[in-house]
Image 1 (cartoon, one colour):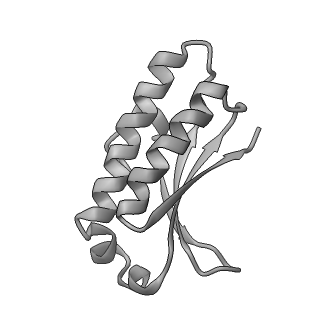
Image 2 (cartoon, helix red, strand yellow):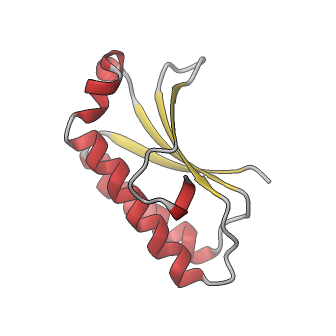
Image 3 (cartoon, rainbow, N blue to C red):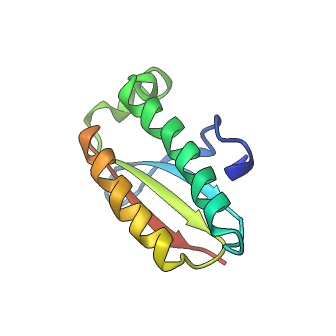
Length: 107
């Protein structure tokens, strides 16, 4: 899973506090090849956004219908400045399908 397999949803769950649906991307890659890392993240996010936009998320978890949706990139390494800009840019696209994107550093 993770960035090595861009067509798989890594994890889906619910936040106990907010009730939001959490779609997690498990990002264990280092940032030494930033261009390749960003491209892999872009491909993975396409899968996640398609999963939401197509309604497949509701087929899998119907109770997600009335919930907020958060795509959480769980990174083993801190984001670079370019990665922060990328997440900010793609957040506007995610907003179109009523989702938010956030990065969580989890070494």
